[in-house]
Image (cartoon, rainbow, N blue to C red; front, top):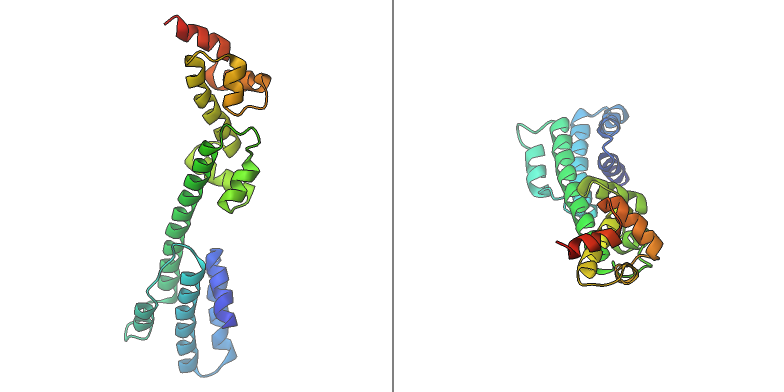
Length: 203
């Protein structure tokens, strides 16, 4: 049903007022109130089915919803919309967590590759760069680019401790050049990798 698809799209975007207005139009199109009430209930059940099929992590028992809608004391339209909104919010939260975990794992596995970019991580995860940036800000408190740099710096510490030169530690950690490495290291650690290494050796 075209109208059910439109309703589902509105609810997915959080535009419940527009969804409500769309259902209200049913009552202006037909004088038979009983028909309009039944059509609204059928549409709401169809919307739940569409959301179940199109939104990962979203699940609403359509059989029980239909039963409730056609019972003697059916839930209000607002109650149904609110329930859908809550399930959507939880599903989207789970989806964002999955996106972050998948991207973070990809980044950690490819840190040594100097060609690793935010764009590649986004492509691997199946989202846009802007979505990935929002997700990382939510779960890591920084952008994916900042996350890559901090993980590379962290990875380089073990190389420095094992006696590798700054240039070698830089290359092994995936930095494009020793200069970039030194600049990034200083930003994260407050000192240069050479000084950090010397201080470690004298501890």
